[in-house]
Length: 179
Image 1: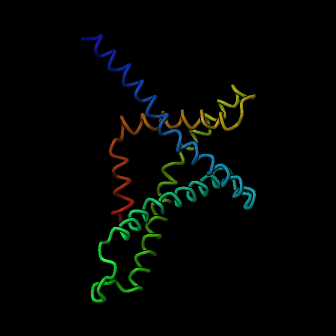
Image 2: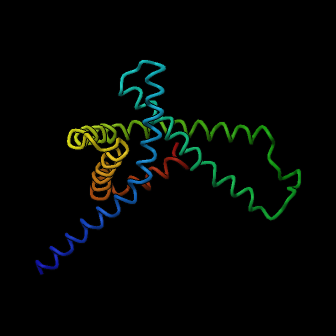
């Protein structure tokens, strides 16, 4: 019996390490984009690292959430079997514009909340980046950033899986049906 428990624990840790690697790749590309945006914001506004990182996180999350929010609607428009909707059933152009503006406002609010939620993870990622940089000074910056993203994703995955497993579904609900 204890052997099975140890094997289960070992396999769970291996799955967590492997699953975090899959999630770390998109996080790495978002971190590259966010790092570039943060540097531009910091150079233009002379804000502190925290403020420029918050603004860059908002910008990147806003773009990604706009895609996540509006792409299903765009694909749904292409799936309509009827080419011409009778005029009595077609929505007014003003209603379409109002729905789009409401969607953009919704995505902006969700992006602001997500940016605040992600800030502790960004601080943790900055700590990991500084620790990796201290140990691997001669390695390229992108490799150090990837290792920091992987470690941050590993810790975030463990927290989400073991402490708040309903966070992902709650965030999806908040994006589409929230307020």
